[in-house]
Length: 230
Image (cartoon, rainbow, N blue to C red; front, side):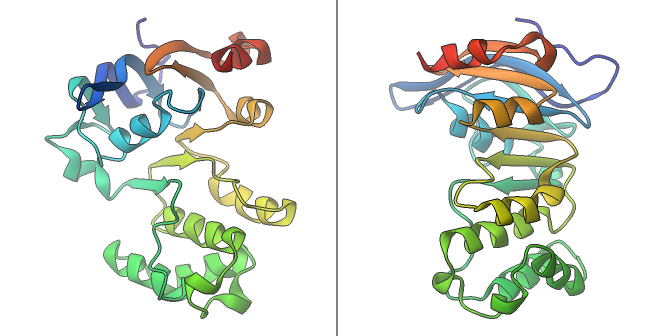
């Protein structure tokens, strides 16, 4: 399956990418190219390789086969060029539990040379101002998710890597974070077929570590995606 990018340069380009954990193959021969400014929704059953793919793109795992380029950086050799331009939201919030949400965000602001006022503004936008100085361990899962989203977008990354970003959020929380994660170049893992498709420009389907679907959104039906889970 050849990559397709249209007229835009590729923000992410994979060619024959594979990854194994010992004898278990998690990804095999994944090939696609995502244009700058576009969103790819990634679908697949549990164990299909979605999280492994996201961790490779986040430079947290090395591919064992093929080539991967993220924001013009060849992985893993040039991973350092991409890391500061990525925003990652995984299953875990990646926050220090004994620090407050404000302390966590200000710490990341220093790492990325971002003004601390932006951290405060983001917490206000997602409705956490009243709990901003409480330890993260005292926050509900939904509140921690909102703080994690603030961390992921704090430095205005060129590429957002999102694993179920609306997990644990009530409708009000989802509405609060939507403007922060709803645009730009994104790789979005979702189990909500309708919502994921509504967000997507491109669709990637994985089945047992193999690429089963890669197509522009208008060519993909709900039935196509649901078939990945059969």
